[in-house]
Length: 270
Ligand SMILES: C[S@@+](CC[C@H](N)C(=O)[O-])C[C@H]1O[C@@H](n2cnc3c(N)ncnc32)[C@H](O)[C@@H]1O
Image 1 (cartoon, protein in one colour):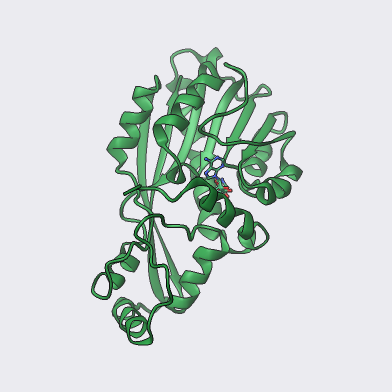
Image 2 (cartoon, protein in one colour; image 1 turned 45 degrees about the vertical axis):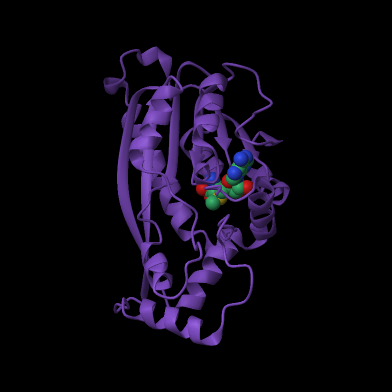
């Protein structure tokens, strides 16, 4: 059984969601902001051995890998106005929206980039690699970064959507989320790709929705609804749906129904 949905299916879901993405991507924006703070902290001149290796005051060549509609590229541009930003994504409708925030857009799979070796000072990716083979993505990141270049990546860890899986667990045996990687395996994959000074930080972000339908709609609106092998193929029966709703309702707080994002913020140096 494959742990990830087929690439074409992931690409189609994100492509379809491009026009609804920005309005729904509240957590994604928060994660981009946190990743940028982590990068600035990790790359502070006092903390790196060779300060000339990554001069943030210059015009860094940045790759935003899995750029979506370009929110990360926009933040990076605000922080480093002279940056040369390349935005890459395999969903054409996402890429079309990212165009406003990047110097160059590239329709490409971030597991196999049509880019030369050593072409970037910073490889950035926020909430995209959970859909990919991390080893392939990090090998490509290491290849396209110059020696001394930096990596900043956010992804999701196994606690993500735990409430949703628990609500369905008593009702059916289908898969309802993708399999999220353990932080240790992300760290190991980064080291295996040749990165050093790998730092991982874990953060919990809790979002609240008025009801379960609103939660599922929000996931679909950002295109994150492909779950891979083991997903339900037909409609859910009325009784089963009511049972899931009741199970989730038992977690309701004054703010609404909670959904946890277990976020991993990683920085490293080539
Ligand atoms: C949840 S969105 C995140 C977008 C953006 N980084 C942000 O923070 O808003 C994930 C993006 O990764 C892209 N993506 C997923 N797998 C990819 C792959 N193998 N190659 C290129 N893009 C990929 C999707 O098309 C989608 O636009």
